Length: 272
Image 1: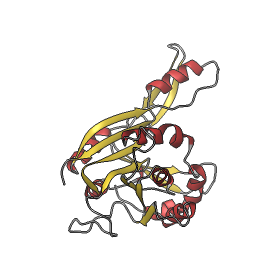
Image 2: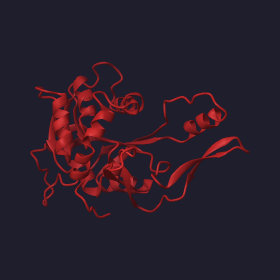
Image 3: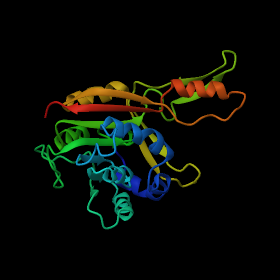
């Protein structure tokens, strides 16, 4: 998968739109689905459970997760390729020393001899997170190798992504089967690695495009194993939203309960 345009340029172009969408505390999906699952996987079941934990959020955007983790007592570092998004992250947390941020391409965190660049600390973090961004990143292998370097032995990488089996932009859709009284998910391309251009704000004629790198599930599992990780938990998250009453509302809700929107992989560092 060859990059034609630098990803920092792409994300700088959509930074204002993305910052407005996510806001101070995250979108509804962040607040009600993704973040509660993430905190639970980190062991944050009680108020002070995460105090003192060290977390690096890779492809942190405008820092929404970093701010949440810092508020829970974590020492938090955010890394993102977009200088504009990093400036927005710092602007939303003026004058604080936690979280901290680094502007860097997360596929280029390692030097040619395999050491971390940008003064990043090796074997330091309890958790690394990649939230709703791994499908915008290519190549994936150096990202996972760098994640391994950042983590302590026994530390965990938690990846949250659009479910690669069911949510494939431009290659998956819904259809109604009124005879059988069900809504069905139709997928017509899955196994092939595919580079898909996405308009981030379709309502604008000149909306900037980002790239969605679709990969089958096996690509993630094999890449994690090759990078020295062992998968310790997998979760599949459905929507929290209820459908308004209508002719097909029961069919829609049944489908929403069966087809997860997000896939979550928690993988433990077992080897360097």
